[in-house]
Length: 109
Length: 115
Image 1 (cartoon, rainbow over the protein chains, first blue to last red):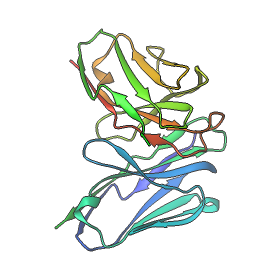
Image 2 (image 1 turned 45 degrees about the vertical axis):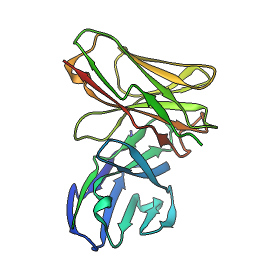
Image 3 (image 1 turned 60 degrees about the horizontal axis):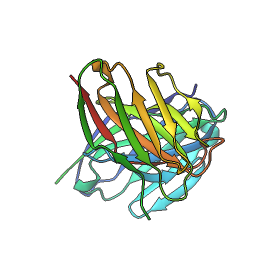
Image 4 (image 1 turned 180 degrees about the horizontal axis):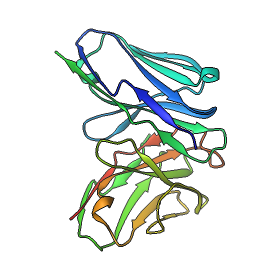
């Protein structure tokens, strides 16, 4: 099945800084999503982005399907951005929606 | 528009017991998937239900079983609980059944502790 990797595993930022999180996947994808998991465990949908570029406020994402990676950009980070960011992908066989190990982001005031 | 709901929020069980977790999908969605998230790890796919049938299954033993009702809500049952079953159990819904290529929306989860 598809393998999903994320980097970096941990990231510490000062409030106001920008960051880029990366997601690599091992096969062509039918579905790729980015999530933010808050401290209570809720997975919040950030982007549904199997290809192309999307923006939502301070966040944007780009997926280059042919090169099998996706990037999540966070600009002007705030303390409320802290938490774990996951990407998850479904391969073209549609068998399994696989999550990466996550990037734990800490934004310091 | 109600999102995905799950119950209970927290649950404590003893090794060997059985547990049932419940999920109601987002309005307009007919497909429900279940995931297990161990501490410090990403969620792992357990199985997916559509039209009251299990359509896809991840690498989980038969102790994990489920059900979907005509109103699209779903239950996850785990028998003969092990300490390693302690985890956050997440339910997700989506509007398409044949493949999981549509965006999935997650509920708040049920935190299960097995002692």
